[in-house]
Image 1 (cartoon, rainbow, N blue to C red):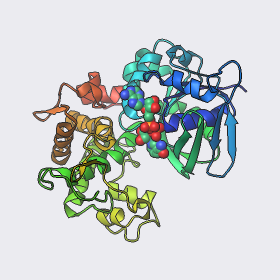
Image 2: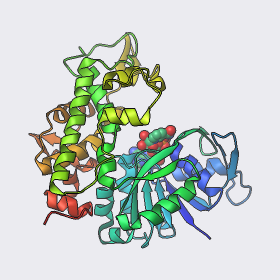
Image 3: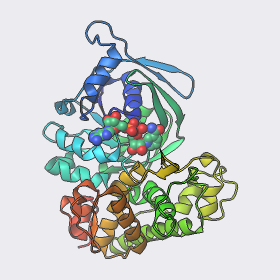
Image 4: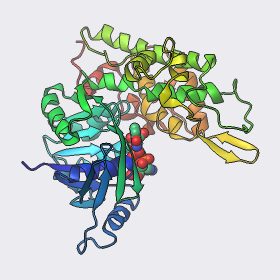
Length: 406
Ligand code: NAD
């Protein structure tokens, strides 16, 4: 049976997803970023779109190669009206732009999946799709199914590794069987999609919102760094010290406080996947940590992290930290700001998160948190519920389609 897939984005993930799905189904790629779609189409076709088709080659981690050609690569959002499945394989700051552009065209029954969703993807989707949201299935993935890179932009890509399993949640829950079966069919046998009970669990689980901003703060806050260049790039995960561990535990505990408050308000609501950061390491890197007895040691002794350094830029006299890197520029707005905004609605104090957001917004030259409220002029760039006009917990639960307290 025919299935039409639309893949959004133009980076590593989007090129890999497009060539994988195009090998079996009618697949379109869309990029709304500058002239990326036209460039990609030109590269793929060697400039000859109607004449000679060069197509794309994807090397899988099994060693197999897939050769395929997407039906079109375009910047036309009306393509969303043809799609049965829309995959957002683009960094999370761009999701809202795609949802907004698709709103006039998208049809009932469409499955819209974000890989990865980061935090609050379901809320953003509901706010941009307005009355149409109820007739579609939003799927939030905890991460990308693959570690992947394009090797020749627009033409060749490689899957370096495929996850064994991956969590995904569907809103509304009534659509989960159909949506997960369809997406599993697209991905193949691996990764096995494990159904998470709800998108709030995916949002609050988001390990990137804790690890990346927490480790950046722990190394580069005024207490720990004099602002001068360093001779060498410090280790990111292996370099986590007692100070940084305390920051990470502080953020993780405050996320747990938010979870407990939601559970107290909605008895029986299942946030099992929104675990502590230490639990996440125990579940995700089992066997790869020489000593997993503490959070710090789980990071310091993790074989997946050997040699990984802080993002640094070369300067005269050594290296300076890149404080505009995605560890702050993506993980704060579309991760930590969601959790902080929800905490505010639930009246849960977040002293550690507040310190880290304050550091991040100064580093980024933005303003999200002002006088203890998610109300800064750059709030619109974040996933804080307040950014889409949600100002009470009742409104939040309604938007999240969570059966509410009275
Ligand atoms: P990428 O950096 O290759 O994505 C770049 C793309 O993002 C561009 O091609 C463009 O389409 C879009 N983009 C960039 N700037 C934009 C802007 N200002 N406005 C609108 N669009 C813009 O990222 P990727 O490697 O494809 O990863 C996609 C997501 O998956 C990210 O969130 C990433 O953290 C996550 N992820 C990737 C991998 C991987 O192996 N590639 C692994 C795990 C998670």
